[in-house]
Amino acid sequence: MELRTTVGIETRKAAPSELAQQMIQRTSKGYSGPAILMLEDGTVFYGRSCGAPGTATGEVCFNTSLEGYFEVLTDPSYAGQIVTMTYPQIGNYGIDPDDVQSAYPGSAARGASTPALRGMVVHDMCAAPSNWRSSISVPAYLRQQGIVAIEGVDTRALVRHLRDHGAQKGIISTEAFALAELSLLLDAAPSLVGDNLVRTVSCTAPHPYTAADLPAGRAFASVPAPAQPRYRVVAYDCGIKRGILEGLVRAGCDLTVVPWDTPAEDVLAAEPDGVFLSNGPGDPDAVEETYTQVERLIGRVPLFGICLGHQMICLACGAEMEKLKFGHRGGNQPVMNLISRRVEITAQNHGFGLVFPSLGALVPELSGGVAEHPVDGDLRFWVERGIAPVVDNGRFGRIRLTHVNLNDGTAEGIQLLDQPAFSVQYHPEAAPGPTDAHYLFTAFTRLMDGESGYLDIDIAKDRLSGWSFASE
Image (cartoon, rainbow, N blue to C red; front, side, top):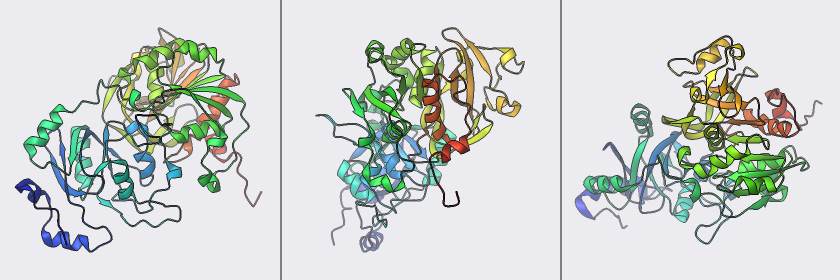
């Protein structure tokens, strides 16, 4: 039995004892050699390799989802990041390629549907999955895609550290174990702030997406059937997820997906009924080519933005963005809908957020008589009072705060009252995650139909629309 632990004192320090290696080697997991994770502040975690060999740098973040690890792996919004999964065992139900979330169509430089994240951190990686849909294990997929990953890490300690000290750059390696060398490599790695990662995950040419592109392998779980296409929609691809494209198609949209920097004039020349602005990775302030186009589109065509798309609408309105301490990532984020007064459990993945007061001064008569923004910036102030406040924006008129994160009081959605546009910070398509926010696709179609109360939707009824039950 060959044990790969004999190179250098640093490697021997990182590797478990030979007895431990022999015990692991005799299990279904097998032994794949030592790995190390080092954070920018010098914190070090030792573990075992559970992906491809190599070295990877990126911003270390964490996702709190209990399932959906493959959708997380293939979400283009994770470009530039090393993702820590907080659930203790990852990979137990394997992977079905039909669940891939990267909608990238492929190019000479990058293959179709390839993951965009830099690395993965887990406590325990399952190498022998059990699921009738699984065709490959997560470790095999990671090796196939060249993604460096580490297991055996105390992810509870890592997440608590990130929550206390904030998200930061990190490095995973199965090759280098000397801390001085790792520190030098980490210093040379780019920061997420100021880096335009959208250009690395967007399509390079326009292409359609129709009901024919829906994955046949998931037809067993797809209820109801897609609506007949009624709306011509142009979707800006800033790193769009396949599940979002599917949600738009199922709502009756005939989609043309365009690159992130497509000029507004080209979009308007197609005479669409609406424009969708997708999710995407990284610092929104670095994606100027998109939000300057959005500024030209507002007021000329109905707009719906999610995640980065929400930030693009906000920046087009002259708002400021802030880097959140550790972001929102997971399928269990509670959001208060200030219009319906219903709480939505949402799927999220972002590290930047809107500074709501930067959109303008409050309109007291439309904000419960309140004339000043909360001093501490905590928007749960409005949740407690049952008010959806409105500000006077210097560019596009009145803008209403529609959604607030109940964990930290940050902005989660806005609605332009004098222009046909709205946006949310979270993902409505449940890939992975809950279906509470599915109604937003319906709201977009109602906006394109010209309905003034397009957001006034019974969330529960919308979730069940099109379903049939034996008792009916």
